[in-house]
Amino acid sequence: MGSRILVLAVTALAALIVGCGGGDTPGGGQESEGSDATKNAKAVDPASADSAKGDVNWCIGKDTSGTFGPAVKKFNKENPDLKAKLSELPEAADEQRTQLVQRQRAKSPECDVLGLDVIWTAEFAAQGWISDLTDALGEREDEFIASTVDSARYADKLWAYPYNTNAGFLYYRTDKGGKPAENWEDVYKTAGEEDGIVYQGAPYEGLTVNFLELLYSSGGKVLSEDGKTVEIGSPEAKEVMKFMADGVEEGAAPKAVTTYKEEEARRAFEAGKATYMRNWPYAYSLANEADLKDKFEITTFPAFGEGEGAGVLGGYNLAVSAFSENPGGALKLIDFLTSLEEQNTRQIEGSTPATVAASYDDEKVKKAIPFAADLKKAVEQAQPRPVSPVYPLISEAIFKNTHDALTGEQEPDAAVDKMASEIEKAIATF
Image (cartoon, rainbow, N blue to C red):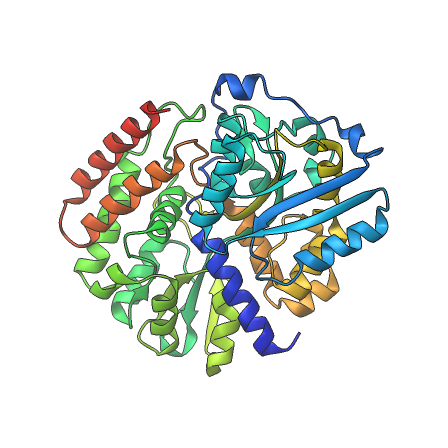
């Protein structure tokens, strides 16, 4: 596709993926005991896909990549006994979730395949709205980047196939003193000496992601492995919070960063007002379009303290509705959509980061996405946001209190303590 079309595609994709409310956790998906719904969930027999017939309806957010429709047509051509249909939901993530929740609460058989933001997977599993795909995905698990599979793991089961993913980068202006670093401390030191660092510091999901990237890079966690205990009130979390707050107070990051989302950060970076920027891959092509070619580079996230560099996953998973009247057909469609060939097509034509590891080694993919190797590494080092049925409440506790610390409305330690208390209350509601 032409460069301008590519820019539009990645911009729309970024809006979709970033708009996804939240995500997953450090160290992989939570393995909580789960609810009765997860314990008694019906598993889809992998063999049922082989003899599947009839209609299959795929419900997912608006196709901003332009690849969903062609994929459905190709599937139908290759599988004459099945007739797949694409039902597009609104582009906004919250509206998508609302419509899917309404259908699933009503036990509607309308949607066979559900396109779920990675942060919704645990909620839908805990409510008994999606089927157990442990056996089915188990046969192909090694094909996927491990971190993306973790986003579909809850209560020691797998509930969806990873469909597309995303992970952030650290961008730096080589013409303004930017350089790669082994740790975030050195990044901020250089930023303070040069033109600063910008990121997503407004009180919304983007700030949750930015805080978690540093927390995970310090070795910290939000929840215990079973998802029952809050671990965010840790020394690592307090150190990260103080570090971020000091960064704003001391000028390594501008005070205006507390109002920035993705686009505000990108525009400041492109205008030469920042040496470093944390942002999603979509900003790479746009920076080149802004005549910054050969003036910037990207790198995966560095370590913080004694930890190892880590990012946070975005993306969508594909699940089989618990109320589907054709689960075998749904599984057949999901297997097709997550095949290597289709993942390659989506990366090449839709600039959509793949979940299948081998896709990044395809020569056509490398040509279409010059930073494919860096992107794969970023996804591999990324971790899910807390996999929890109450993730929206967890995220709100994180971004509100982090924002208060950045703006000086709370001391960093107090912000972490309040965050931990609010997350404990959120977990107790389910």
